[in-house]
Image (cartoon, rainbow, N blue to C red; front, side, top):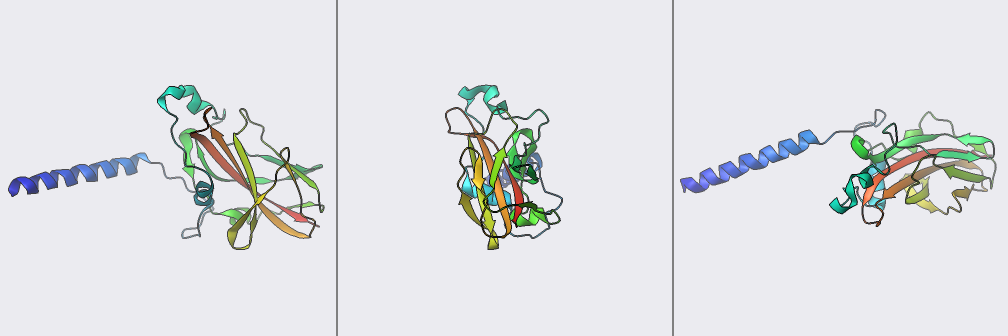
Amino acid sequence: MSILIKYFSFMAVLLMGSLLAACAAKPSEEHPLAPVGEAKGAATEFADKIESPQSPPADQGPQAAKQAASPEGQPPLPSVQTGSTTIPAVQSSYCWDTLGCGDYVGGKALLNGTAPAVINPGDRVSIALDYEPLPSKVSVSEIREDNVYVPVDLLNGAFEAPKKKGVYYYLYEATWLTEDGKYTLNQTSAVFAAEVK
């Protein structure tokens, strides 16, 4: 009986040590604007839509893991424009190289205090990423009431602005995959807003 107690005590100590080591090794990334107790963050929503980042398999080599690394080590922000009007994009959730993952407060809340760019009904809104290599997958969603995300059709990196007047919020997401498309190397997202006058 005492051997069993010693065995289980030893196993419990090993398990606790492993858990503490794992917690200490995992970086905690929080956005300074994300209030404590805020609703589901964009990274959680982001992760629901696309697969979680995974390390590429050993046969992909270290270059595959570095493929989407930016020179500054930061996730790239998209350039959003319509005609001569630039629509500011704000960094949202990401899982990026050695930075780890950052979970920002979801959707519209990130843009509090940022005035939406004024555009015309039906304008062509183009989104470009000045970054090599280009992402494997890109998507844009309109953020509606109660953080409902509605996919927006992109054609050659652009979409048509709504024709109805109002303020519209969008989430941009980009994902870099290994050559075989099985593993995620990096992910980033950004939010932007436009007011149709």
